[in-house]
Image 1: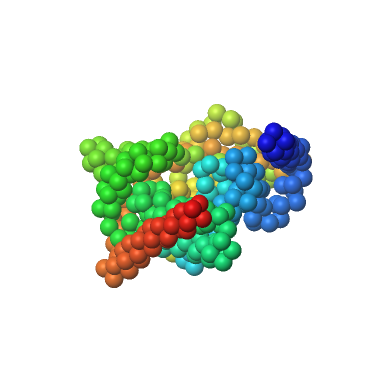
Image 2: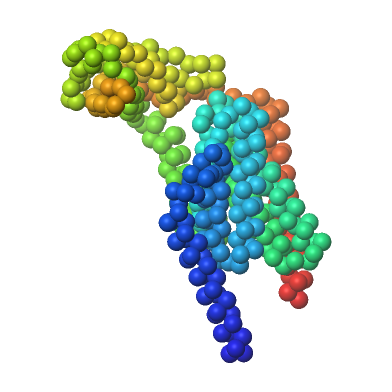
Length: 362
């Protein structure tokens, strides 16, 4: 027994040594690895995936760590494919140890139906991935694959809870926003059951967001918000002519025009007549632009050109599109039935896998 324990300790220590060596190599050669992977859109995803696998492998067996991260990848790939079908540009998946994975949308959906479609893609493909693992477990009677399939079904089911920013909270926008109330109350039960601080944070942010949208906003007037853009302009021709350029503390109000394209993205074009500058900037959301200010100038002389970085402050009032949540009744029914059917199927598969795991233990 003692020899066996020593072997296990040695194996564990060896694994940690390899993991530590890999981490040191990543730190020392990180720039080289990034250079090798930067040609690929999925370079960052591969690096974050490898780091996440290594982190989970400290606690769980390597096979489980790899399988778990691959299941996360399949889930996120579902979102990517759904977004592509709707013509929405998205980033590659980013993996964060102990938090999961995410994609960022470079352009937000213009209606609740599109938002729900993209959200539904993750749990759907994630369920297909978990089913594939279950099929492998059934064929080989592998405890590891059974455990992975159970976790896969569970993760996709948890994601269907009607709580933002989980997928279920986004699907609810195309079914009925009353489901958010179900998520608000049911989330408390889930927090107590899971005893997860991370899930408590998700629920708390969701509750506060509902408060801001439907309670606080009704009590207060809409406030003007601001954000800063820093366009870079080339003024080499003015510099060569000896034209007086504005100093770092130069401030003034700028004239502007704003418009939206056919895809619903809003832009503002600002003008600085004294420098003959015209810059078009992307706005963070649909809004009513109030003022555009020049809040300072950074001088950036380079060997090739003399440039100015304009610190443009944009004051705006967010525009709430009341038509965002207008979804045809037929689509509401389709999303609602699909949402409920997927949740019931996942619960059923968790029960089936649980029975298999129980039989293996017996």
